[in-house]
Length: 329
Figure 1 (cartoon, rainbow, N blue to C red):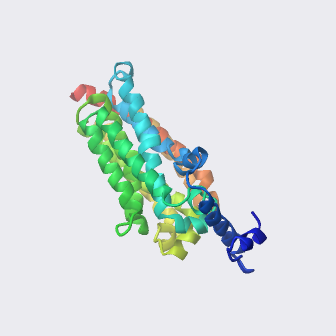
Figure 2: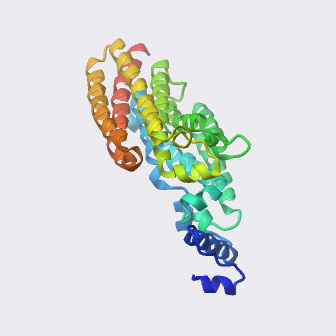
Figure 3: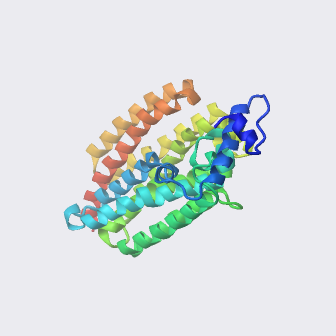
């Protein structure tokens, strides 16, 4: 759709200037929304951001491993939980965030389904509500502790984006909420689904530590939107501390929990697992040194290197703790 067509439809074209292209895209999206009443399946899938499902699904898998229960004995619970952690709870959280963040996305990512008009009207909100309801229904089928964890995860998802709480307005609180939702709660849920009971304290302790470390991962992800965050008054850590200081904080927040995990594994007499995490942490330190040279430019590269080492460490710890649980249980 071109500018002349927008004029014909009664939409004022954007004047020349720095944000001309952005304004035309948003105005075209408004026109598209007026024509469409139901979003396409492709637009809905894009709204739920499948690329973001991996972290909670991986953490749920770590929870399965840490429980020490044979998967073939509980495969329906394992499969249902993976769907719950990824497409349902995580996907729903993305829809919630996109709905309440649609004005920020108009600056940072105007091509997203809501600001572009491919998710018209209030459909973004309706999909977020529907996803929450279906998530709770599926969680109820998987057990009481799974349902409890899902309730907490969804409450955090809504609190993260929805006014007046809007935890994402401050990077300290918002990143903590996302870290626990993506890592700790998903890990807890995986163990609870397999055990049909409250997981033991070693599992919960590891889940909490890796959640705290995920705070740094979320900070690195904020580098890409720092300009829009500053314009919209969102105090992400890169926006309030500056990119360089935020990068250092992110690195420290990832290092300390992993050091504590290593100490716990040594305390539990798991020296080989501890040694493996030491090696993975050493790799991360090398990657961090490179990241700190150009944090904003190298954040995507670090996500493909340092973060992968971090999540493999989670799996190593999960295998270690299943032995601890079996010995203490």
